[in-house]
Length: 284
Image: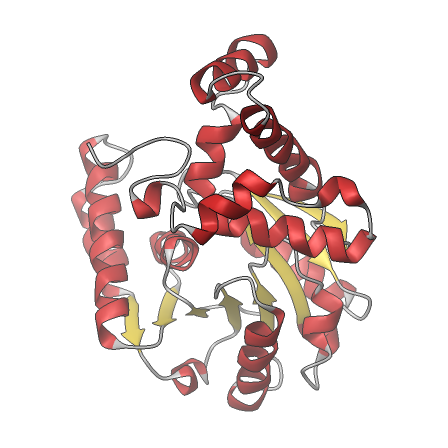
């Protein structure tokens, strides 16, 4: 099918990044969030990130102008009614995602594909909130979206091969590398990543080493570009906790239970970079 119009529901870190890459690839994008202040902030973030790309000569000023002109901000979910593909990027809550998908199912064209950028929640369960389960798919972008190449495409129990093929082709047109996985808590990326981050938090919690030293061991010893605690701060400690809780509940295995220190950080509002403080202090 010809995909030209894209809807993005949720304009936070992931949502505005997704709108960013689609618009640069010459798709028309409608970006939706709860109020004008939020979507205006997202547009400002997209502009700032594109200006950085222009400065680094990754894109031209004309590319940036054209891309920004292709993004239409809105506060109405119904504004995506002409979209060929909608990517949901709201917070990691099953209840919220089901509510959003129920609304999208009613608002969107019958042939529209509805994708979730969820990093851990069941695509099959999300699909059960709609009358088009064959057109529901996971489209898990990595953060930061404009830089990271992988898109983890998640096949729910009813996702059709046609839907998977279309989303794979679109991902490639964005310059991404799609990898298809089956629906399972945490999928592949976070099923492997989050236990590593959680174990790093346990090392800090138990006083095995300081945060900087834990990260240095993983960077120099394992050749990771970023240490697990710094990466957790980038992802958001609330997001890390949420993903671990989904896997803990889904597998019933204690190894996925979030470390008490991670829970404490979230409860105190120390969510990482976005809050100015997590395992590191970013307020200076």
